Amino acid sequence: MNFRYDINGLRAIAVIAVVLFHFKPAWLPGGFAGVDVFFVISGFLMTSIVVRAIDEKRFGLLKFYLARANRIVPALAILCLTLLVLGWFILLPEEYAALGKHAWGSVAFISNFMYWQEAGYFDAASHQKWLLHTWSLAVEWQFYLLYPLVLLGLSRLGAIAGIKRGVLLLTGGLFIYSALTSVLWPSASYYLLAARAWELLLGGLAFLYPLSQNQKYSRIFNVSGIGLIVAAYVLVDESISWPGYMALVPVAGTYLVLVAARQDSILTNNRAFQALGRWSYSIYLWHWPVVVLGYRYDITYWWIPGMLVCVLLGFISYRFIENIKWRRLEHLFDLWQAKPLWLGLLVIIMGSTVVIYQGVIERFSAPMQQALNSVTASPKREQCHIDEYQNPTEACEYFGKDIRWAVFGDSHTVELAYALALQLKQKDQGIKHFSFSGCSPSLLHAAGSSRCTRWYKESVKAIAEDNRIEHVLINHRYSWSLAGEHGEVYPKVPAIKNNARAQRIVKSLDATIHTLAAAKQTVFITLPIPELPKPVMSMLADIQITDESPEHLPGATIAYYQKRNAFILQHFKQAQYPPNVKFLNPVKALCNKQKCMAVIAGQALYFDDNHPSVTGAQRIIELLPEKLR
Image (cartoon, rainbow, N blue to C red):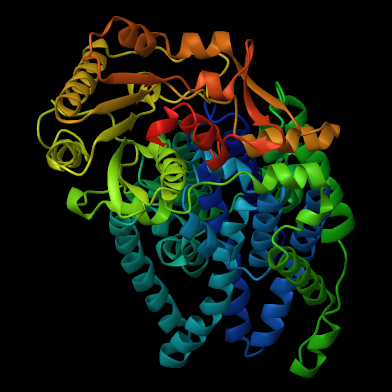
């Protein structure tokens, strides 16, 4: 097949969109559809290679697989090896272990399954996954493995005509499957081949059913196709199920450009797009790690140098890695001579070793190791903390048999419960643990108004009626319930946008406190636990670069704490509760006069940016009267 300038231009249009979307998503909200454009192109090219070879009776399966490996593996393996070396110096053990896992998964072309299980292409955690974008390469490789076998089978049934009919039927069937599963199982459909295969197959149809060479229609198809692609980039966003039926817009657009086959279109055949098209695979490989680097270190205006770095690295990778002429092998016994496979094997060995050694914590100084090892959540979190309804009678009880305490609230009570239970264990007393993830006070809310309302009401009733329980400790992440997450806008403070909702929450909180105070000896209310500017692990990673000591690591200021929690602090100050209601002030345990701390005496006080670690929780529990703990 002669060189297709239109395909090269399409690659440029695809990679520009993906890079822009990942650096500045607001500029091109549907830029992620560039991946779909790549899929259609791949389907077209693979169909042309395989069908021509089958028709000419010269197709070799091993030869095809090795040719694909020669094209894809070297640049990918070099990227993974580079990141593994870089990660040794800048990544913390948990992060480095994750990179090792993702590196070997990438060159084994199963990373899409890994990320499907971890879920969240658009979530915040995605910017901590250096090789997240390799899911699309895994999808393509899985297609390369299966597609030739399908085409060979179809050719046995009816030669080229059988292939045409078979691919047409498969495309239609898998499109319907994708449209349905994108709604029913969005994460699986996003990452897995089954819901993406129709896009690659539609590219195959562009080859199998070419447009007759009519200049008038080809020009219309070319312009219309590019218009559809650009429309998808501009009009689609992350809220739309993808790849559902809406993916037909960029996919159909790419199909039209392919069947138009115009080599003289200025929209695709211009100097800039031809260069970017040649480098597009390498630019795609390097762009996401560059994005992650900027997010990791909060580099202001990173998109400006970042995109230039992507193009530069893409050019270097194309010039010095992609252009290597690897030996073409056709026989199985020559497989050991396939150098790209050895490169991939090296990545698998290195990545697996990093995973086995759990990120190699021995790389760090003793004080840093101590701080890292203290970033721990309650060992009871998985067993006793819930995120869907469970009858409160099934709430955990531990450690002693004499249950005199209940700990009640959202996920921010979990470590407090564990720390209190450790104290009470010495007297053979124990606690009953009631915690529901993300559950705002909702005692007075209408039944069914939230996923935890029923649990909340029943738990308050269960605690009040349990005659064993004498004392209750209540804690919520109040300001999150009232105003939302803080990390995305820090150091600014998110405003309360719905005052009516805020009033309903505090009225429910007050009702809870009064109900339990009437039934128990003492009710302890934890004032807001200070939040960090970013996760404690990220803060430790920052000082690892600068070689600072992790002995004492400050977080947010007291002034920020007071501003962030002004509404609930004022409410508590004005509230009139019975005399048996007492307050615990975490500021006394976690802060000095100016700042709240992330690490004190080499011990991390949090395990993320808002949940106290076991150490942090123990310091808060020490605020309780000694005779009660």
